[in-house]
Amino acid sequence: MMNNKMIFLALLGVFSFPVYAGEYASLKFDEVNMRAGPGERFPIKWVYQEKHYPIEVLDRFELWRQVRDKEGEIGWMHQNMLTKNRYVIITQEASLLKKPDDVKSVAVLQPGVIAKLDRCPAGDYCRITVRHMDEKYSGWYRRSNLWGLDNSEIVQE
Image 1: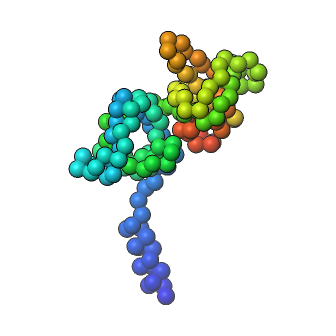
Image 2 (image 1 turned 45 degrees about the horizontal axis):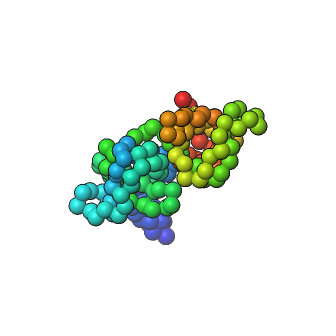
Image 3 (image 1 turned 90 degrees about the horizontal axis):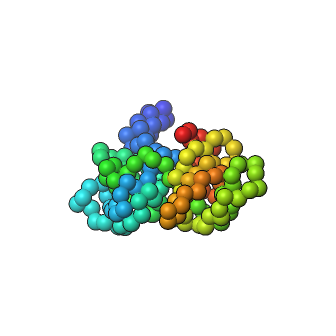
């Protein structure tokens, strides 16, 4: 019985791999391919046409990153297509506030808007910046209405 447990644990170690869930990146370019596997020989699953679109990094293989988008699509992207600059997607309409504990609204943000994540201290609100045409709006937005960071993740400037 002891040998069976040791064999099982040894096999578990052989077949396990590191998980990078909770690590986020964003697209560096206006057009980025998501592939079915880690290499250019694999077919393209999706073509993303939104610079700064945030994605979650699940795994790594050489120069490739296995990623998941907001809709749950999983595929592979070359590391050169990604940047560590943090962006988030607005998931629920709400006011962008001047201060976290304020009622003064800077703007009302719609679902699907991509915002730069400036910082996210412990608590319910994160500081974000949204660009619309030639205007820039910065303020505090409820963490639970953002996709692209973990619930308890702290992001410094």
